[in-house]
Length: 99
Image (cartoon, rainbow, N blue to C red; front, side):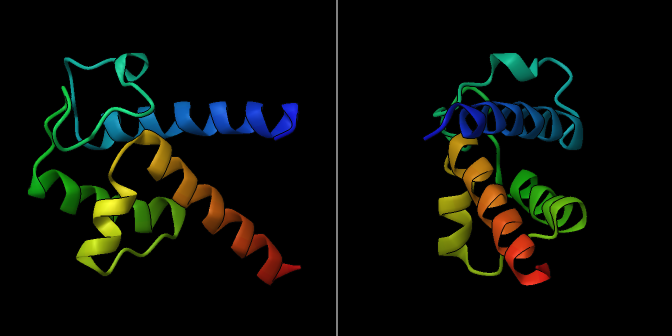
């Protein structure tokens, strides 16, 4: 992984953390306090099915990502790393399709 990709990844992870806190109105949570590998469902955030439903809709609106299968959702929402990775792959795929 190049230095440029590392910076983009760190920026995207930070963006995703802020997006999550904002979308779910997590008033007592700082984006910086969320670990990259922390489980979103079972970690300190303790997100529930309603939270994931809200995130699914928000991700589609904001990032154009559609999550339709429960198994896919479990993978995508496993952690910030997994979610940021899904967004990055979607962006790469969209850029290839546009070019």
